[in-house]
Length: 272
Image 1 (cartoon, helix red, strand yellow):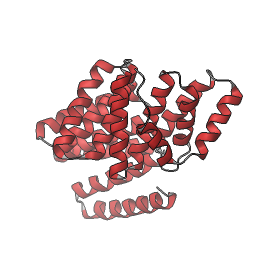
Image 2 (cartoon, rainbow, N blue to C red):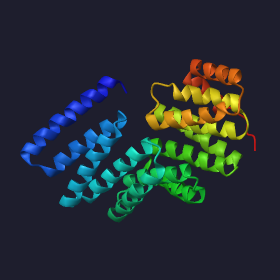
Image 3 (tube, one colour):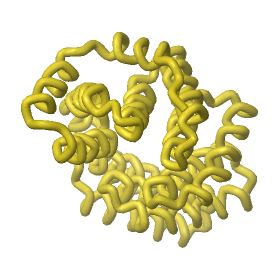
Image 4 (cartoon, rainbow, N blue to C red):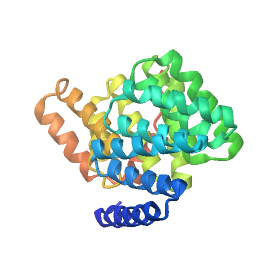
């Protein structure tokens, strides 16, 4: 998103918050806090985002808004995830999932299952991650929610790759990329490409991995967490490739078109 879009959203949220505080409407106050905290998180202002979401969570607990409580817990998890603090995010997502299950809110369950599975994946807890992500994917297919499903498939590909199950990893990754392309989600596409880059690196295709990671890292639509993951992979590859080769690969990646790279990944032959 453009900087102006976030500035406009934050100004709207601040104005709404002021009006609702004057009116004394706690649910509306919480909604404005939720919007404002999300905008601060997108801008990378994590301490302020966390403070606002904590205020929102306390208010929603006070008024007994259980669905709102779970949403605020997810938001706090998002703040931690954006900073790469997956162990810190995990209990927020666990509590949110428990509440969503209790109140029977399926969409909330899907979001929490994916986030929790992703945290476990990033923490190396692959045995715990896989069933969470599989449950999320089944729920998304039932709900017809392809955006979350695309993210979840990418995460399942990451888990399979980490376990050395490369055929399954690429099947999941390709399905994630295909689904992201069909629904027009650039964010889901970039997440799928990060996982594709990780798989390439695991299978010792390091130059191609660097190209794909560089494309993601420098793409205007990549969110902070996705850029961080791509940047981390690039840092690892710098220790494994000669400097001139690494620099050339990154330069090629920055010049590539997103759809062109997606097509290559979709048509890539399996290597077990």
